[in-house]
Image (cartoon, rainbow, N blue to C red; front, top):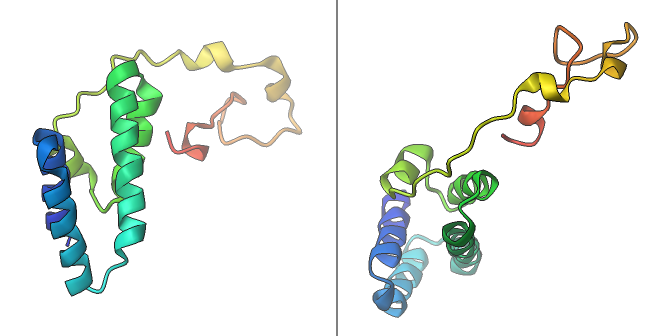
Length: 125
């Protein structure tokens, strides 16, 4: 099923004129596989909306959300890379810019050994 969903996404990206035909095939395939088509369709619609917004704005955060939404559509990172959606040019800010003296208190428990803020892993970045 993952291969079929990936092929569907590729087809819609490369040949948007065939959307209705591709949707019908996906619906029939979901019925054969006893998969909830309406839920998958919602996830795919969100993916394509994010893709459209990403193409307009080209921001790192939209690219990251696009990757996460692809996972909700059963598209893993390897297949996502095959879609040839270029990541946004983004320079990560230096972590020292976010370190505050209030976090270095001995009573503060942080996930950083030096008392700085570490949180990208908390929000999935």
